[in-house]
Image 1: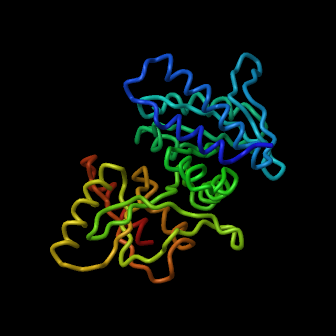
Image 2: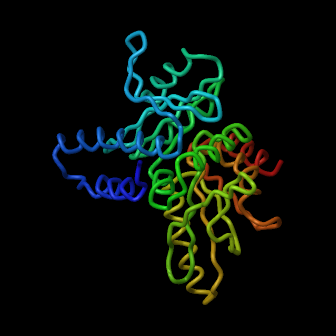
Length: 279
């Protein structure tokens, strides 16, 4: 019998490993992380199969979900995963039965170029998990199946291969990351606390840090008790897709502010993005 408390304890140990740890320790953490994922899948009754080869291809694992087989790959590197790594995994998924979906888990996140490149592809058959997602799965006890179903729905309905599982709540007292919870009665994911006076959607984590600092300063100067939720879309092209998923999370009529920053020096593309958001 798999003990979820034990899974949480092991996960905390893995997260506590120093960035300056020896390479051998980091490799050992990667192996332990794969075993931890296997335990998570077993706990949710997903019938995992770990580490096998097909025609010379190494597959980290597979599992069943609602009658379908999904492939997965897990990485815990020091740097964000580049597009080349995702394309290599996508090639493995493309060569399998039509409709097969790949789940990629990266505890170091992804380069913005990687997410953008996949979002522009002809076929979307990958769903990406990051550290925030795994924190929600394990630390917040939402479970892998619940988080995965939410992310699959976002991918199918809005084309979001890397949808946010957390938002930053900014108040005069300071910012804090809050997580979403899965609502079994509706089959959707709701915010842990949906009260906010404004929701801001930005492109990347750097934008989120800047917006967080600015909004906190404004709230302090205005001496107001209002709160603001900041959501990172993780790619520019994901920004206009978020309204279709946020309608399940926030009450109707919630004010939304979408930030489009033209860092690519392409005002025409920025205008097109704004038109998509307003459509």
